[in-house]
Length: 256
Image (cartoon, rainbow, N blue to C red; front, side, top):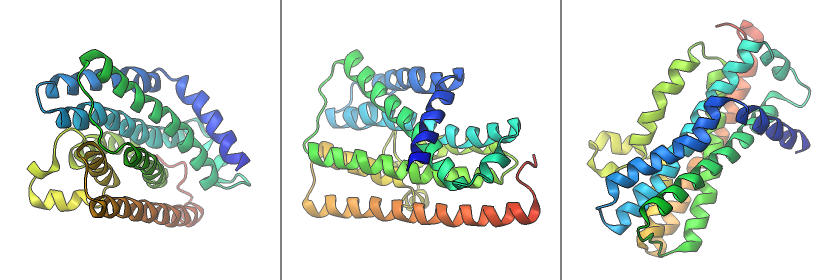
């Protein structure tokens, strides 16, 4: 645990020292909040709350998770420290987990900055009928993002095209998860695909917290999000085990 905390603190300091990351944490939430606020300011209170207030925060949170998971591994590879981290006694998974937790904290900061901007700039009513369920969904969403970041970090460790991939997956995830508009308007096959993405379940949970829902709906959504999060963690463990074997056999850790 001490190694994870230390890794997280170091990562937070390193991340915030980069201009691009400061833009993602402090400026992107302002732009996203203003843009989605302008789009939904004349819609219903429920839509404004879900897609402008919550959705803008989710998009910036996802951007920080997506780019930090990719760029951190890429940067370690370029500066030549990735092999050192890979062979560290405490374990590569532990170090990466600490890095992700550090970036997740900054992601949460951007999440709340975006909501603050929407609330202050537009000064429209914000509607939540179930605050305890909202808090539960926020906590589960953060946990699921950590699990998702672990998967991405593992895959990016052995990929030679990190920068291309991290740009490729950002907006499709935003669209398929229903962060900025309802996924019900997408073709049915894409709606089925969205069911394997934890942010989709998170947005559904936020919708239930805003509009209210039956106990059965909330339990079903909570279980769905929890199960997918557990699957993500199991999958990330398997990926890191495979990475360990592949990198030792193929000596491909620093191959570009």
